[in-house]
Image (cartoon, rainbow, N blue to C red):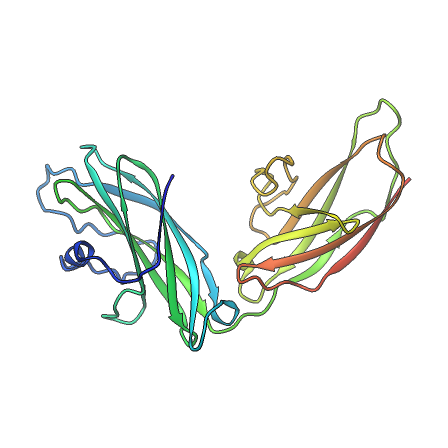
Length: 280
């Protein structure tokens, strides 16, 4: 994946020229348009599967001076071209106001098809709010323009932290005997967030004041705790974050402390929830 980071929101002359070709970049998220040439035999590039991180911004939690705050936005998409002459991947971020100038733009030179990523520095007034529209498209060496794919970022002036509403874990377990298989222990934390469960970035647990592990809401896909194994989570995106640990016969007996916190995409942290596990 290629990645370009830009600090200036000012579009280049090339991007301004393309935007001048009557590309309307203010359509709702999820829609595609086809601003390329009308020649039915022309093989324009195609762009699909846009992804934006973060999808939520709470402006009161972002760094900045005075009335302006700053955020880093990452936009990725799949780009392909039958003629294999891709030139540039473009990203534009705007407010929902009609005719508004771009807040940030990016241009990524392309050497071939694949998953392309751009990182944009977004500087906005603290009083901003509502959806920001994200548009991505590509061009090739012949000047043909792809379809445009859309996403959005929800922007609010303030945010509330997430909350851990319950924790499901045993209070006491017995170690397996020598030579017996490990005992799987499932720990589930139910989490809510006033800005929506998708605003929860992660849930972590600190064990005995030292090791920090993450609980996953990934449907057991194994993408949350890389290298730690599958989480044992049942359903992705349901707000129930799961960690599955293995208790071996060689683990030391005693009382283990667990401190849980949920963290949202603005960095707001929930109140800590403490539990203990007695290993016999």
